[in-house]
Image (cartoon, rainbow, N blue to C red):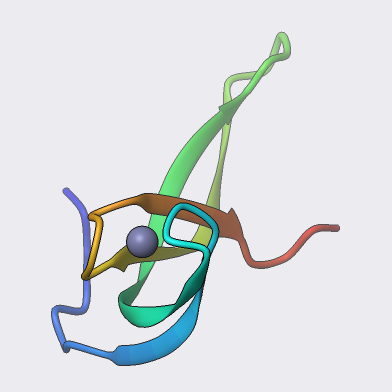
Length: 66
Ligand SMILES: [Zn+2]
């Protein structure tokens, strides 16, 4: 049950695979993570997911690195 906003956000950003600035599709994804502990707790973390429109390389980055 992923609540993804499917609005297309085209952004020109640096792609490490391409080694140049390319168009990226950027989405914000809420990922439910389970924490390793005795109490089963889930935290919902927003990730910024981007996909290079040139080579298809994807990476995602947690938005709050607390
Ligand atoms: Zn690329």
